[in-house]
Length: 302
Image (cartoon, rainbow, N blue to C red; front, top):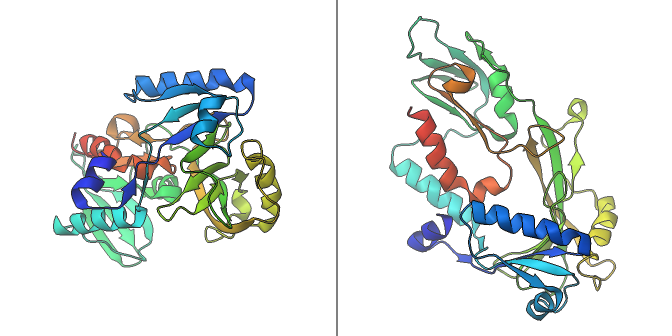
């Protein structure tokens, strides 16, 4: 859907492809499992290749084998978001920036069609329907609920910071290079942008809630040591001092163990009419945003 949207709106993108690489023979089964999962989800063009085939595609790569995804691409994310914003406003949406949600109050009138009042630092909103997609703070919005008690508990929020480092100099790869996924994320992978600049990341850094500063997106240069180790498993020729701190993001995890993401709750879960919650939307949420919008719209209109 994103590909089709970019074509129809002249948003810059590049279908560069991706290699998920096994750096040890024990990881080859994981690649087969990923391919099977892709096929179950309708992605039929992935191909398992051996090391020589992968190296023919990416000469600087070291691996035992790889899963090739030729339809993977990159996109001008800011151009995409501006396009979506413009279309939303054309359809009557109003974006209120720097607006903090203070509470969400469900009217107790005894009817099944309840109105919802949102108190903000900019004023009051009277709503017939609310979609809570507040990212990192989506669980907090539910915890500020007034006048109703959810029949099932709201997920806890766990914050996992991921830092990125930028490569100085020419990119060694023409595709995205991903290691086999790790327990809490996709591992330190190599991405290219539309200008062919290479970045590596993200790593995994769990943030302690008591010390969490939501504005702290600084990248700790000391974390680069782990990056060099991780990257050299699939690109041994990475030179010392060639990485510079770039940027970071914070993942809205729903638990610290098994991955649980893309969780949508409507009244059938929490028992509150006209309220839809969107939890655990990690970074693939941008790629999947149009499909997610369809799912959420269907839930909110039931």
